[in-house]
Image (cartoon, rainbow over all chains, first blue to last red; front, side, top):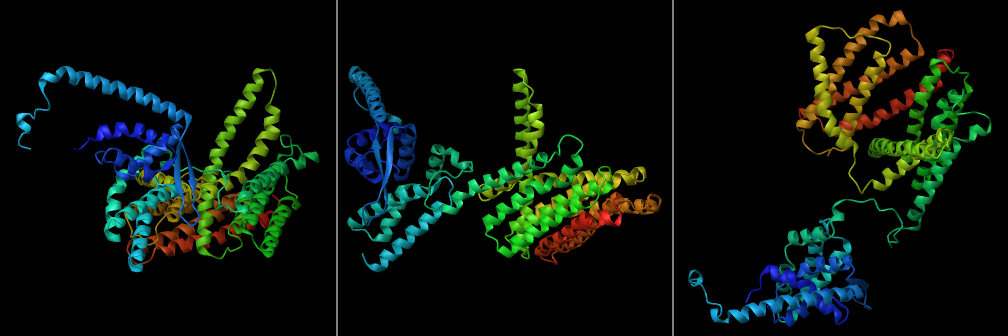
Length: 124
Length: 456
């Protein structure tokens, strides 16, 4: 299944904040976690995670530090802030509302019966 | 994984990084972060059994196209597209103790320049009253030594060069003050104009760190002069606004600040601005594009059009040039402008580039200026005997000849270049060599003219 770009973009912020709420992490690990959680269905272009992290940092939702393990390369770790937690809670509320609404719509329209492939798309 | 493929991988990663560095949206730290990511991805892929070069290709592909990446970074960090002058203050490992001291030293030099102009008033010489002759003669002597001192410190010039600089400044001070020049004489005006020019070239020696024989370094000084002039004008504009508000706001509460502005803010500010502008040019040098060449690009076509129109008008109407007293000075200034346009076009030019349309335009500008000036000179030589040789006219005529010589030879070199017979470097060489002639002439006017014209 392929998830459209718009949905990926919309879910990126709550996903990243949610992962960081579990503890500090760095770009690659965040990406791997997203991959595992979605069983590979959410596909991000690796590089684009970083502008997003920088944006969250500018907004004050996360903060970052460079850490250099002995004998290793330096790596940038991100940590969620209190403001970030508040933002995450707010996003959760919004997503819950969206999901509820969708459920409601799909529940009442059960008679339409699922995902009938329209005739003109049958050939694809 | 073998050592060989490890090597190859490192080379590939280095190349990828070099590629990223060319994007100004991506900072060094961003590149570090992305490289860390790339390496993690490669490690994971090689552990899954891929060859390192395959892993590299896939990792780069997954990173996303560089265009897309830098577009996203630009959206997040749009300020990076505007090059900023970062004032020293954020501690960085690369800034040495010396460059941290740069700002305080500059402030010190600027303060010295600002205070120097108030020293004579301790001895009863008032800047606004009848001692204006003293100030106009000595104006450059208050600030330019401080500027030279700043460069001498910054370039760590040898003590011999410092000695030469000090001697030249003392010579200038003696020339300005030892001769009995009356306040209404012509020679005092000439000294007031030429001493700053002579001393500016002395500052040039300090700017070049004593290495004034090098052509390339001299061109740097020419570039510096153009940028300095622009920054000085900008600072002066800001200063004008500051003064207007000072007078206006104090006037509103019934206090008169005009006296303070005239005898403190304006003179001290102007003196300090000379040093501050020089520092700004130095600090901005690698951060922002030079302005002088940009202005040159804009105004060369316009001046060419104006001068050509002027030539056509002379021929059409058959009017001779009316050689009034001030005409010579006007045409001197015209030559200075044309020379400036030429100099700053040269200063920004890629020496290896082939002649283009702009070069031909430049040649047309120089040639039309030459023709106009030749007409002026012809008109003047007829009447010079009527006037006799007063100091003013001799100086104006001498300058005209010097500028004319420069432009004539430049036109010749330019023609050779446009026709593909001579390298462009010849033109640059000629202009930088010619600085000596300006220095010689300025010092001659300051030192010899008062004697030759018996202080007229």
